[in-house]
Amino acid sequence: MATIAGNGPPSILMATPPLIPQSTTRGSNSFKLPSFSTHNVTQLLKYRKEGEGEEDHKKAEKEIKSLVKKLKKKENLHELERALSSGGDIPTRCVTLPRQLDGKDGASAQSRLPHVVYCRIWRWPDLQSHHELKPADVCQYSYYNRKSEEVCINPYHYIRIVAPPIMPVLVPNRPTQQPLYHEPQSTGLPQNIDCPLSSDPLPAEETPPPAYSEVPPVDSPADPQSVYSGVGSPIMSPLSAASNTSVNPIGSPAQSDYHPITYTEPAYWCSISYHELGTKVGETFQAIRPSIIVDGGTDPGTTDRFCLGKMCNVNRDNITIQARKHIGQGIKLMYIGGEVHLECLGKNAVFVQAPNANLRNRWESATVVKVPQGCLLDLFNSQDFAKRLADAVHLGYEAVTQLQKQCTIRMSFIKGWGADYRRSQITSTPCWIEVNIHGPMQWLDKVQTHMGGPNGIIHSDT
Image (cartoon, rainbow, N blue to C red; front, side, top):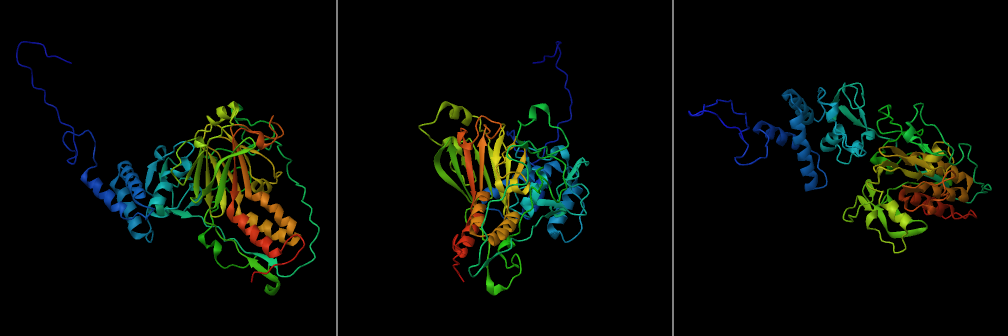
């Protein structure tokens, strides 16, 4: 503590007191927004699209308060309110934040990007990822313009990508002579052959082991209208809610000879089962939320999280015990418009076998892909599956049955498997999960029911 020397009275030092907002309460260390900012928060909050409850309201209020603090210029706030109050009916300028404030948050960055957060608050509460958005033509500082130091968060400067609906499959109403079906040999890469996905070399420590394909990081440059996972197809092309609307079926034969089998969304879009070596452990998780976290935690109380840490197995060996300790933040599964995508959140890679994605990339259906932390992989595409199903109907019942394999995705944590690993099968890995996609499976079942069986006996449900 400083003292003042001398025998006389201490000098009085005059200093300008700091400016403190009038709304700051005496005796409190917490800083409150000035009254004008509080008014702005209230005004902006009234334009929020309703979410699922009070918790969503609190989150939105917190995000808007944060935004008001970051938007230093009043004209930015006024421009944002103009955009929201008009519902995008009048032209508005970009409302920007510095790119370093863009909310990146490690592997889960895609759902925390500012333009995603504010589009979710003010336009689409069910928005999952920046891959569902593309910039409007008027946007000069969109998130996808990597050369810009500013990022536009004006929700009316972004457009939600909409894919065409899934068309019904036409199944014959009467028995026909079905060709003898032989499962086709893949003309693509054989299983576990290393496939370079980019001309940019990987750092030495990230070079995948032989026979594995590795996907690029989230920030890989891409066309914003078709963000690629690096494996040959768009990572996101969300399907509109019109997937169950009436559309022209695949093909156009006489309607009296064929019955259209439509695709419908089930209550639970997938089920996830957990396995240790060759043993299923615990109950199967039924996914109702479009975004699911599978991790090593122990919290069983939420519908959007499948915690493997709480799974008990009295026969668990030491190798499995040690592997489970490294599951960590695990993975995120995203289901958007009939498409399934994966993001690796944990520090350790996961090893994924997704037959539908493999065939789209002209790989062997059993190819295993290594997905490191922060990387995305598309796992299933309903549009592609619909085309394969329509083709399979003409090849016969057995060809349709083979498509069941495309509805199942397997992935192991920590330990890989395959031709270049000591473990040749996933059932030899210490901890892994199996994901069954319900919608396509049920669609197959309806088609097979109408086809009648391998002998070609047709059952009409008309």
